[in-house]
Amino acid sequence: MPNKNIQSYAERSGKSVEEVEKIWDETVKQAQHKFPEKEWESNDFFAYINATVLIKLDLRTPKTRKSK
Image (cartoon, rainbow, N blue to C red; front, side, top):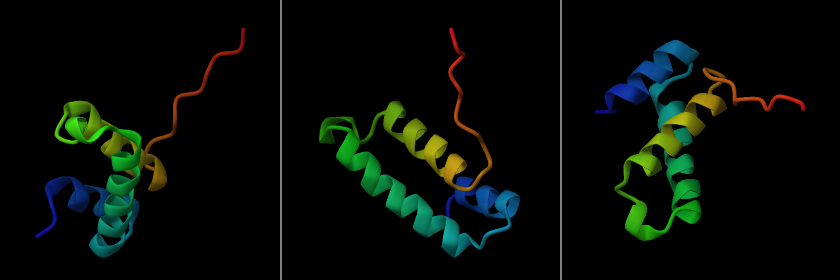
C-alpha cells in the first residue's frame, strides 16, 4: 500500500501510483548520495525528497532567484 503522499501525488499529477513510486524511489537514492547516512531519518532528508518529487511531477516549481 503506497503512502498517502504518493497516492496524493498520483491523483494530482495524473500519473499512476506505480509511476510515482518509481520517481519516489529514484529520488530516495539521489537523496542518499546527497545526505550523509546519519541524516537519512531527518526531517531535512524527507523534505528534500518531497520537494524533489513535487518538482519532478510538475506539481511545484523551484524557487527562482531574484536578479539584483
